[in-house]
Each structure stands twice: as structure tokens, then as C-alpha cells.
Picture 1 (cartoon, rainbow, N blue to C red):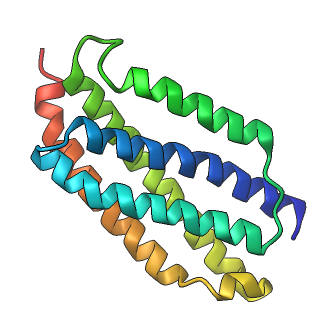
Picture 2 (picture 1 turned 180 degrees about the vertical axis):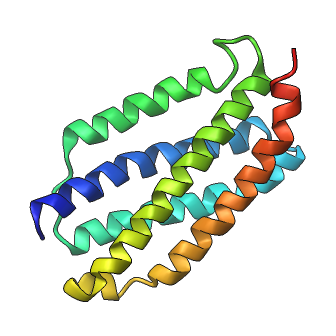
Length: 159
């Protein structure tokens, strides 16, 4: 593998780790609510995508960048505080911001799968992935999270 794809996949792994943890946080904070019901399967799918990326990195023999792994861990810890509403005193606003962050992250993941589609012919390890299905799943995840985000906006952004 080239060094540039190593960096690219490490960047996405950092984001995937944050996204998986964030999706699980949203699910746990909203357990027993309609949002919690939506986020359960979404969080599971996002974690499965993170594992797919991890397996791909193994197959491509990509070294993990410890600095990027640590930055993902730190970002996850900060997001736990920020999106809980503890900082603003408003859990609804925290939920809204967590959903917005997750929606943007899912779009980034979708971009990863699309970019890998363009170079799949150059790497046999990529041909083993069903990248079309991963793009479709990212679209479905984004649709679910975006609908929830939009539903949360009136409460989170009022007065």
C-alpha cells in the first residue's frame, strides 16, 4: 500500500471510532425513547462499519498511527461531556449537536467508501468488499440520523 492510503485509512479509523462511540452514547442516553429505538440498530451498523474498516486495514497491512488513535480516544471522551448537555445545561441541545456531528461523520464515511470504489481495481483487497452495499448502508444511516436531527431541532434550538 502507498503511504497516502495508509494516512487516509488511519484518518478514517479515527473518525470511525469516534462515530461508533458517539452513536452508542446517543443510543444509551435515549434508551426507551423513539430516538433510542432508532439509534440501537444505527449504532450497531456503525460499529460494524468500523470493524469492516479495521479488517480492511489489516488486509492491506496498514500500520495503525498511535497519535491518530489517541486523538480519536480524546475526542470521544470530550464528546461524552459535550454532548451530554453537561456543558450547556441542556441535554436536548447536547442530543441535537451529537446527532448533527454523527450525521456529518456518516457523510465522511460514505465518502470513504466512494473513494475506495474508485481505486478498487488497483487493490485486490478492496475487490473483496461490497462497497456498493457499504455506500447504501451509509445513506440509510444518514437518513435515519438526519430525520432524528431535524426532529430534535425545534426543541434544542428554541429559547
